[in-house]
Length: 392
Image (tube, rainbow, N blue to C red):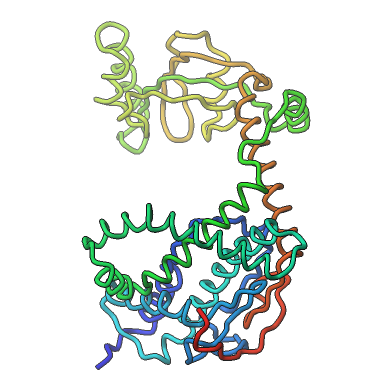
């Protein structure tokens, strides 16, 4: 029997299922560079795209010369849904889960297409305009190398994670998570070739010249301007905490007298001050002129001498005594203080630009057909068909 949670709980858990999908790809591309569409309605309620297939051999997409089957996607999706439902201790009918399952499948398919595109683009770079036979030869060689790396490195980690040295047992445990040894090996090969493609096309540590830093600083100079600012310590009494203003004043004068003759400011603030920063010893960090709610305090902060106790300051909330510890005039943050920050910003912009160019070149080079072409810019519609049972 299925439990019958409220409509709100059902929608919440469906949201959790959608949000919780982690396919495990390690190749990250900027969504802006990919130009990804928003995708279907969150729960598929207004979605008129094709339904998910039943046959695992159904071809969901073709990337270059490589098909992506429903069987490559389905185990990951269904395993993740089952995991989230188990964690949330709730069950749903297949009909209730269908919209979330479809959304997850489309997201997984898009990730698989992206990874496969880079793998295909890498192989095309290696063979150029040579014959198809040469391409197959290079593809076999590169996948053979990737398999060797998988067995030399990745497999060791999987054995440790699942606590087994037996490959049959390991495959069984992977299938319980929606994967398999063969699928992990295939995905690893695609990701490895994809990383090699990115490494060749994207400069990870581009050079940023002093001239570029100076130009960026000058262009954004207004954002580096700042008002005068000050930091100070404060003692306060709030009118709402005392029967009369005179009694409030008496309490504040007593605090100030004790600070002047006996107590430290921080100790007195923690013991008797009534403002929000009392627990911090009345210490107020750098604050820009004009940003305080209390205009009387703001005015005194930028007029009284440094390190001198102020007269009693009155505002709508209460009475205050302050001591300004340090002030800085209005001005512009020097380039020397910002140089490394600007350098890093420009570096990230260059990397993003390089990634965007790589994506555009890749989309021109590698054709894509998909059951859900709206999810992948440049993809052409694919009419679902069943692959040969010998297809991988």
